[in-house]
Image (tube, rainbow, N blue to C red):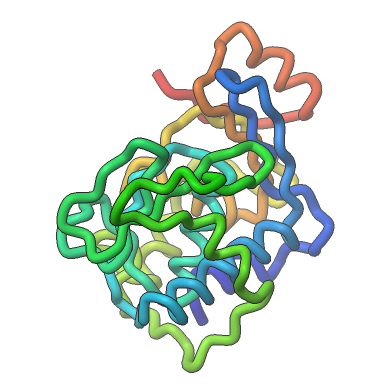
Length: 233
């Protein structure tokens, strides 16, 4: 079973899973488990059908903590890809608008638009518009074969090692299925991403704040009823 299936299977479809604030944009987006699963499926289908990604294939993640990034990560793991931090020799590298991916076979620009809109035709030469292409693919992913537990998953960690490390971190943080985590941590590869996986491994929910304004955090704690803080220094 892939890491994505293991993480998402316990969640009921309608449950709010990721709530994303971007304080620079002044936006709030809430994704249910079903919506996040759909984005992950579209991503996995796009990676397999358009880029021939197989288990262990290298996918570079050069994105900030964002709800679209969560969909990309889960989609990559669903089809067995190994998420890495360098675009060198990556089959696909996901970058924000204006980002570059030297050495990658394909550069996929992720709009990071709060409402999930694509780049509206403003695609850099030699790159592809991830949102515009992925949204055309199916809302479910049917893997041709299970992803073995010893498949590379996150840098040099395998699927089994990522899950074990994440569960250990969740236990250390005291996370449970009742936890609602307020986080301003960046999703660096691998440490920051492991923090995200720990939250999902605990069956908790996440309130992620990008470009955080510290003055707004108390209000988020109150309105979102968060129970755990994971704040950047």
